[in-house]
Length: 108
Image (tube, rainbow, N blue to C red; front, top):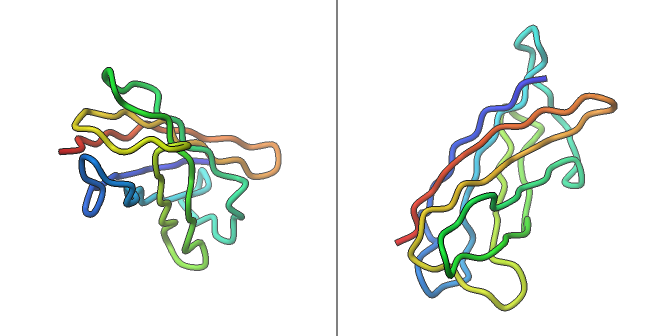
């Protein structure tokens, strides 16, 4: 299984709790799309964030019936986004298969 991600801070800004968007494509080794995965099959971790950054949780997962999954992440607990560079590890499982990738975002 293969995953490719891209992240965009369209509405996630310093001092706010609005979500950061992560778009993810999941394919089999032959390039065929993997669709219909449930939210609990995905995991997003803030692996590296500067001082003042926060861990994140998935607040919404959409798609999966089409080509892409749309994952929204927000800071964990009562934290807010701060002006930093975040590197996210994104993983997905399907049966015994697991795939992962990295994506980065600058919140300003």
